[in-house]
Length: 46
Image (cartoon, rainbow, N blue to C red; front, side, top):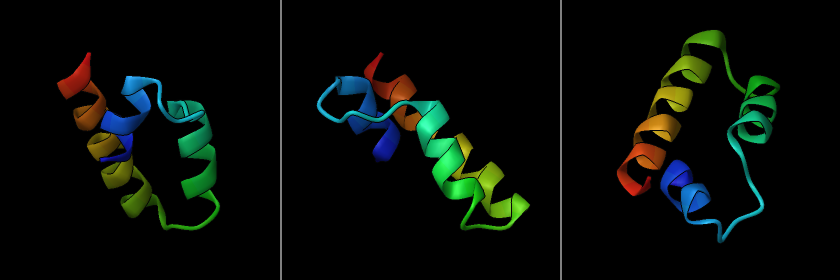
């Protein structure tokens, strides 16, 4: 959902910022899963 919302331009959030934020909070496997979800959501909009 974050990826889709970011892709609309309504949030001041890009993939790099999202990745940096979750990398400091989640384990590597969770980071990978969340980045895949972010990309899927963004792909639904663009």
